[in-house]
Length: 182
Image (cartoon, rainbow, N blue to C red; front, side):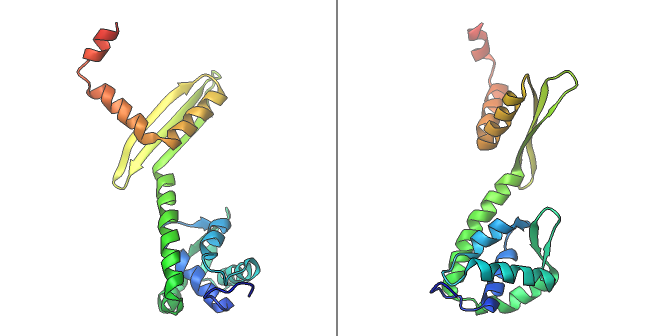
């Protein structure tokens, strides 16, 4: 091991990977597993990579066609048994990093936007905002150019609540503002 952390061998790295994958809210790619596992100086890239592959081979984790890692029932059982073997400080740092990761994953699943070309050469931009209970807003607008469609989709992803608030303000206004603009 290269570092001086609390993780000292490959078995502890495997425990750490199982601890992490048991707590993420959805399957995650290699880079995210790596980032979350590197919370301790005792973990190095090569040992991590070997341990991750071993966990897939032993069916503690699955690796999907699109490169996403998820924990299996076998992995969950073993994670529960072994998590107390991880140093407390490592678990605390892991939990902090996992909370941030899960917030990002939840946000990504709740805010969606895309665009597609119409037969007439314009584009339909689809934007959706959900919360924990379901859909809040599902909006489709037309864009004249692909660059405009991409820009609208990106701006929506950055601040969907702002758009939702503006739409609600317009719809809930008594119409006086619109009369004075004419």
